[in-house]
Image (cartoon, rainbow, N blue to C red):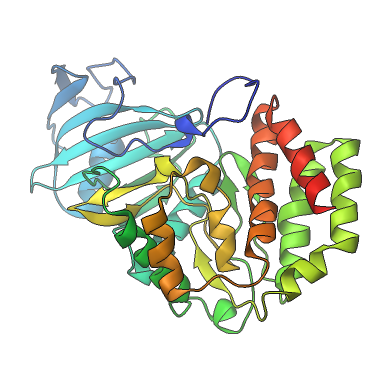
Length: 345
């Protein structure tokens, strides 16, 4: 996310989980000795070699228990507005990536559930989750998520990415509720740092109205936005959704912008999700910040053709993300929210 209160809408650059080998300048704890007797010595770039005592503790010990291999190197990998990142090299050659935060464990629990669902769909390369929860003793944070460390490359072929996204949207749901036609997810999660409710709901119109649009409007606490949104809900929402025919639950990444997509071994990859089951078109809500090319859309719509009213619904789905940016940052996002609501009303 862009820090501060911008005068005009900008992409959410600091939301990106920097799970690449070229992450930003390392910032993390400078301590090189530990109370449990495990000591480390600094190496260039913020890394330190871990010298094993009789029994490792902290994340070194946790990873050894979880993965069956000892940690030989630990390095800071920068961070975002609400999390710090570290990488761990294991003796068996594997690498782990750990995010920690002062926030409660529910944020990373939602991310973990989303990554597992995306990975199960099989359309993208997605890091394997090793665990999440309260950090082990000796670590100074309130929550963590540990996952496979992937070497993310450039965005790659946009046509391949569009094809992969359509494949994921068409995949059979891995959750029985979604298979039964319900919208939502197994747990609530976050979009950025904003709470995102995902209780299972029978109707997409009801889910989008109550769990997305009006949820964000309530968080915005602005009478003008509330009045305009109520007009859209009362007069337009039903027609906007009915024009595209039956809407079936598709697995959505939920926050698909340029900072959350890449390649691994030249294959399309996604991370940092805000997953739920919804209308497939809703995954284009961050298209204003995704840089999708004509090749992307051509490949995607070759598998899932545009339905009537696509362009108008695209405004509605973008609105949710603009509202979220306004809730977090204020500034120029407000005017964009007002303009879209006026167009739709």
